[in-house]
Length: 431
Ligand code: AMP
Ligand code: ZN
Image (tube, rainbow, N blue to C red; front, side):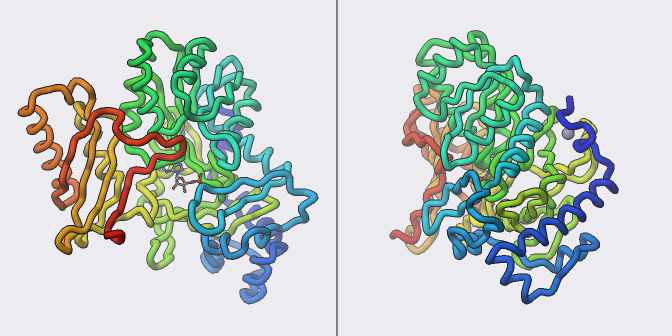
């Protein structure tokens, strides 16, 4: 059950001591980076004695990373840096993170810990359908699985029929896949006449890298007859392996021996108590090449109060609600796309995909929700479809507080993407 029992079940007091020690090491180390050197010259903070002291440290933002591109956060010479990864941003300088050999070992160990936690062992066949390269999802899991000794199929995303062929021929037991792709991939099984429940050996999926609702997870579990575990990470904090679900699937254990965790009010910066929702802020505790202090992830979540039945003492974060910048304001009402997804996925007749469009019409915002229907429903009677449309509109209205226009389209109508799903099109400025 445990990859590293002592550290995974570490006593709270011990963990606190360990974190304070690591925070001081990180503080000393980060002052070697040009960016932090300047920051700390003004601040005059020599030592951290308690978690209260941390509140005096400034936040680091994505903009700081961009402004100090490419080497402003590096604490060491390039001779000791062995790899860089970069985030999926599409505008401006990308954010780049550098690693030493030791940094990569620590990251690998975390992924191995996550995979082992839910039962991956050396006799498993692991098909890694996440992108390899600058994106951290593919390579991160690859090294973790290799450490566990599983057989890895480093196939990357896309080419769905070939994915299914590999799954069948090599008796794949574990997959790592974007949740949006897991749903799309399923449509190819039907076409190929293969039943993933009966004809394959799948037992576990790791799904992550993009927001998804509990309903989507359950759907993936049902379609494939597997357990799907939520995996959270971001390139600035290595990538995957930051927080991960245990077999109880009740929040993601965030690895507090590697990250110091805070939840803040995104407006005021105030640190919030466990249980309250806010922005996740992380400090790296072990990274050497590029430590980050109080990094504002922009991801919204909360610490789930109480202990987990599995015995791990690292606290759990809730499913990510979205990024603070994902929030849509439609005619003055605040809406997160995940609320729309939750509502759609509660209705069994709908298909696996949807998009959201916001337009300006007669000076008012108009929300369009376009939803794929499964084949059977799409070919149903007009009355059936009209009733379904009414039902979904009503349920969305109850959830959101505003009335959307629901449109149905045929399955597989939306363009395919290999990376994270793009589902929100805000067309207001363009009109
Ligand atoms: P990147 O650094 O490009 O890999 O993107 C990281 C971002 O993807 C995070 O900051 C989150 O916004 C999102 N993300 C990653 N994993 C999850 C997850 N399990 N659930 C929701 N969002 C996620
Ligand atoms: Zn647990």
